[in-house]
Image (cartoon, rainbow, N blue to C red):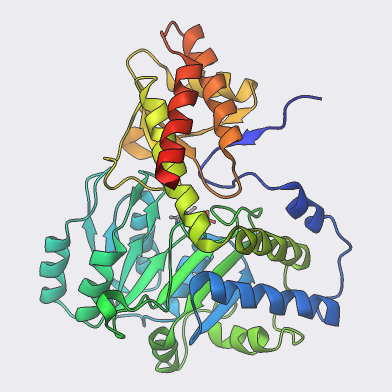
Length: 391
Ligand SMILES: *Cc1c(COP(=O)(O)O)cnc(C)c1O
């Protein structure tokens, strides 16, 4: 049998056999008490995952983009203004989305590979009153991680809602809605949104949302919103009593999600966050031995994925297709970086062995392209940096 394909794109991420088995189980009625228990257990674990204990969590069929949309339309009315902090492609998506709903939007954009400067954020927040500020925790186009310790207090001091896109971070980088930043109970994340297929490690198909008390109050303050399926008011009764019907849940995806969250909770959130940070650093160090440098400086680089620049003489399409022929799938870069870099995910339920295999295959491909590289040296560097960072 050929080697199992190693899907190292920034999502979907590899799905474990246990999760796949859950997907293949008998489809029960969505009102069957046995299914209701699975939903309740999944929601309970979701509350723990997001630290969302005094708000509401939602698990609904849809992708991360619908979660972004629900986060905006349920908190911001048409004509109100938001500030988007964009560190790449998915940051920019908030601007397009806000435009579609008649929400006024200002954007602060960083150079790709850098963070938005907090000083500029401060200045911008002083200029206007914003209903919400959107932050992409890890922008999947650049591999840059936003600094929540700086941004949450900054935004909350100005009274805007803090909306966090966690699609490439949730379950791999801490996102705790109960955390009072700088010890101030007003300095909390108001909305976390994500999809099932990235750091959570479940196939695509579910969105996950956490709404804190202030975000819920923002929805309450609006009579009608330009959404029906995406209106959290239609979902709150279902999340409280999953035996009720609003729209048919993706039954088998919920089975898979339950097992996915059990996998996460069994590992432990703290351990999982540490593992991801160590793995990110280790992969970048290992790739550096091939003369491949990450776009983002190590001080801002994400635990979950890296955007890696090609050295001279390595052609993007040829490199990626040679890897794919050997069972290792990485992604191309987006926009102006297309052809100049590739993106590799190191998140979810991936293991150190997966990355040893990936490095071995990359070394073989690079050698065939005439590069003088050493796969075993890269693997030694991977292991050294990984274990050093686990302490
Ligand atoms: C993938 C991604 C999205 C979009 O999610 P879909 O599930 O593709 O709709 C949004 N934000 C970030 C940061 C992402 O990585």
